[in-house]
Image (cartoon, rainbow over all chains, first blue to last red; front, side, top):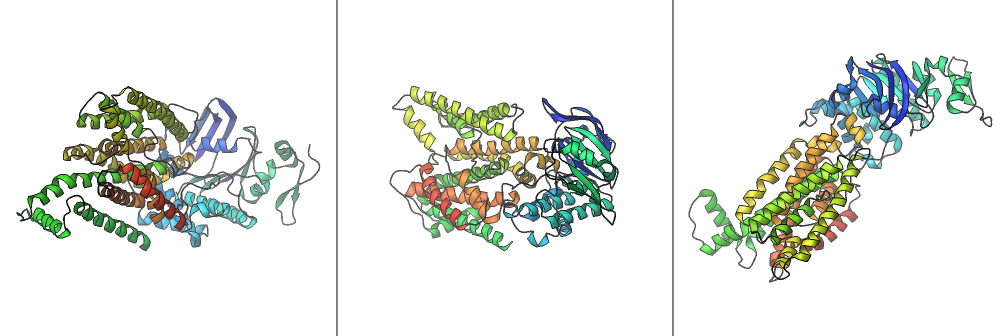
Amino acid sequence: MLAIDNLAFGFPGRSVGRDLSFALADGEILCVLGPNGSGKTTLFRTLLGLLPAQGGSITLDGAALERLPRAAIARRIGYVPQAHAGYFAYSMREMVLMGRTAHLGAFGAPSLRDRALADAALETLGITALAERPFTEISGGERQLTLIARALAQEAQLLIMDEPTASLDFGNQVRVLERLEQLAARGITVLFSTHDPDHAFLCAQRALLLAEGRALALGPPREVIRSDSLERLYGVSVRIVRTDDGAHTCVPSLGRQR
Amino acid sequence: MKARSIAYAGATAVLLALIALAFAVGRYPVSLGELATLAGALLSNAPHDLASNVDTVVLQVRAPRVLAALLVGASLAAAGTAYQGMFRNPLVSPDILGVSTGAALGAVLAIFLSLGALGIQLFAFAGGLAAVALVYGVGSRLRGHDPLLALVLTGVVIGTLLGSAIALLKYLADPYNQLPAITFWLLGSLAAVAPGDLAIAAPFALIGLVPMLLLRWRMNLLALPDDEARALGVNTRRLRAIVVAAATLMTAAAVALSGIIGWVGLLVPHAARLLVGPDFGRLLPLAMLIGAAFLLAVDTLCRTLATIEVPPGVLTALVGTPVFLWLFAVSRRPW
């Protein structure tokens, strides 16, 4: 699937991160944790080929990423950016349909099959009833769900999601995480970032702790998300609590920031 | 779905009625019956028994002007529709990258050099293309900025530069012969369009239209943030270059034919978007129908309102402003 080796990334003239190596297996969920400004979004943009790598290599299905045309990347990697308001009043259905672009010819328009796939993606996210609403007028959470549906319609093997739970209420956060698990069960690989370490405990096979663009730790969540690593990462005091049924959760201790 | 069909049918019906009206009214009125007889005779290639005046007025005088209004209106509307989507801004008009200012400089230069009507048209067309090529060439080399912002700012700056060159030429021009000609050209007019001018301008406008029709689905993705469009598989840099080239060809052809006529490229895409939504494939045909109808209505008013011709640029604003505000008031749809 996707493998990076000794990757250095950043903007022209400004380095954001380096020395990053990992490979994603089919159906794996990797959760990226890190404070604001630690380089999560920049890393994702580099993995999508939107920013050129500053060093090291990115390999997608055995091919060097920088040699692949945009449509070839888009057929393999779907991107769920942080939700934005949009500029024109495209309906939610039209937004999702745009996910089919990489599968169309340069002069093509969506076929009935493309429309059916878009409708199926809306159905999967449970937003069919809202399909005709304009993207500019819906809530932040509904926008986020629309963008996830669009990535599903893209039929990519790897989904890169930049804080997919950021603007969602508690119920929708859980629903999105459930959806990620179902996708992974279908063999789709998911790379997502979050500000809630509990999300890594809930659904990720591995967690990457990113501090100033470098890997502080990478491994199964229960091994790398510890009280000391979170304290180093975020600068606050946290206890990891094990519940009676074996789940893990983070409990911050207020008033004891370093 | 139904509302969309009504919008297309309504716009087509209005356009056809306006075409009939434009042929009928004027200093030498022609009745609808005479028009029908003439059209029938032309279609069946048979002789007719109408006065030869009717033949001359309809075919030699009014036909080029009507066709020019349709071509210019549809072209400006199409270019405006493409640019508003691409610049993700509903307040963008087709001349944001300096095509009108470049065309104006070309035309003013041709008048200053005392070239004939054909020279003015060719200079205007070349000036429009050259100005946009300059803006695009400079703007796309400004790396490290948002590419759209770089283009728009370069367009504004170079437009100002070209504007001062126009001002200089006006200052130097002969105030009795050349200056009035410059002023009239800058106001825009369809009065002097000859059939030969149309034959030159129409192919360029059509060449510009082809990529817009072919890329009608992809055009939608330019309305997304750049990163998203690219992640969805679009080479945005190349697509933008194609759109700029296509819209510039259409606008330059229109401006060379008619001079600068404002408002159509800004207002008509809005009106069409309010009716059928932002999807480019649905929007473009309707915008072109409305643009053609709007400019034909304005031009027909221009030549019938008073004994002298009213510049269409003045009337597009007079008609356009209230229509636009009304549309904005009755519509609940955001852009």
